[in-house]
Image (cartoon, rainbow, N blue to C red):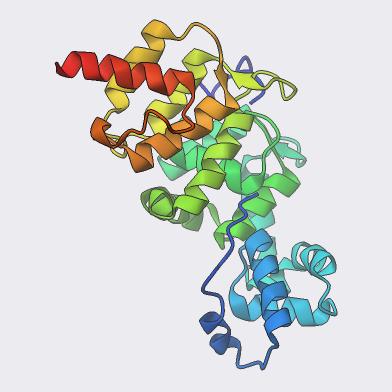
Length: 274
């Protein structure tokens, strides 16, 4: 599945709550009520801002989360410490018209970062940008990704994407949000509720490589036995399967709420193991 290298590719927010948010506000040295801490945590969940800056933004917004989100993105230099002039310079260096980064610009960015256009790193960038379609990042999307990743240059972007790619699977809530984004991103039509089998297989191979012990067997099974497109439920439940079952079929609960495709795969594996 070629995501970013040609115009013919089909049109394809990170919300993770921080349950341990109480201790991080010691950094801000601001006395906050429990309610205020919850509001700040909501802002962090949306913007991924550092706690100290999130407190400052909430104070400026009069403790209105919606207004704080608007302020955060309207004045990113104040609340992120990033040089937005550098962010714009990075954008313009790969944008042909000053409005968006199209396929040629994406390929140029990938060459500068020494990453594959169809890599996990590029999917992570798309996720952080909230990109609406494959092969294009408008200025707002590009800037959003840079702000969320905490970088203001393409050089630092490469390091941030590499680090995130290495750590994303260890935070299952973050990975689940990313994984859900990918499903919607690779859909041929935003109105569709499914993705093609070939597209799903390509993405599973990319996202679960080295993380799911039965990945090769699963991909082969789907390729041979699944003729209908992959539903959102099937897509989502594979992550649960990879986390809960991984390569130990004995953990599989046949009475669990698994899609039929999973049941058939387990039966297939059980037959192979006899």
